[in-house]
Length: 237
Image (tube, rainbow, N blue to C red; front, side, top):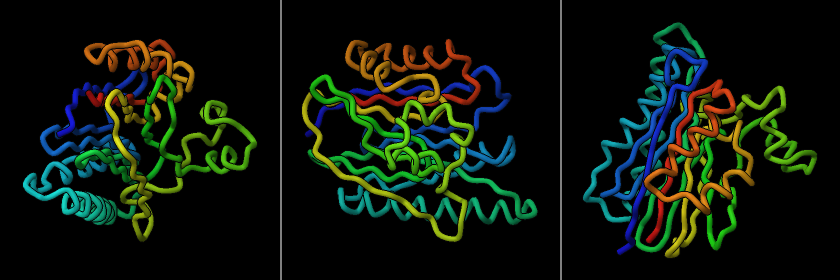
């Protein structure tokens, strides 16, 4: 059995009136979720809450393969529920980015859509495991700029995939092995707008689990926190 410790926090930030982010930690099922809603006060918080509420209803007795299938199906149902609400409100655009992290035995699986991210610190080196579904991500992948530079691009907030947006939900998935000593970070873009890869690597390498999310949140707050900020850190021990 994999031993796990985690810390999680979400904050409205310094400019917004409503926290449109939602987070979920299900350590018994070994599932964690960060969802970043979009669509204004009524739409964003509704959308992200639909995502985490739906995941929270997954049957905890499912075997690992069944759990991962249920996670994908749950996100698809969330997509439909958000679209129904958007139609009820007159066809407004609303949705949520999502990044999920699930551990089954000695492996992890992640589904994501949008620009909420998963990082892994392994052997003192931080790696961004997800790739943003966004307009600026195409510039990064083409080698025209770094991820840190992309955060300051005028179109940095323009995502190309989200739960509830588009006819079909396009989820991307990665799998990998979990090793003792690994540390994983799930976060919304409210953190990565202010924390460079180098800053994240330094903090994640040095800070204990008891204070890690507060320290990361403070980076965003010190930077102005113009967006909501959500952070989950998971240690494999």
